[in-house]
Image (cartoon, rainbow, N blue to C red; front, side, top):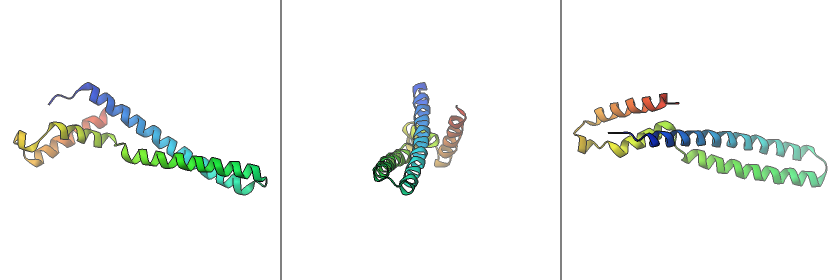
Amino acid sequence: MVINPSTVYWMNVLCHVREIVQVLMISSAIFCTISLICGWIIDDEQEKAWCRTFACIMAIICLVMIFLYIFIPDKQTLAEIMLARHIRVDETGWTPKLVRETADYVVKAFKQIK
């Protein structure tokens, strides 16, 4: 089994995208909360409407980021997907236990790649 270097590159890129999505998700949740609190404190109706609108926008962004975060796999899952493409128990004659041990070894190696 030969691992394509571009596969490792794209795995790392996808992991960084997942981290960015996580930061945006947390930031938008914080901004949404702050906007709602400001909307309750402020007396001016126009500013209250602006705070509520901004809070709704941040809530939508947060929900989109949650959706993306759920469906972008982490590095371990990506490594397991790559292994599943290359290792077939029926083709190699390996036992499922040996396949699992090999998969665990490769996943550990991928985790060490920064």
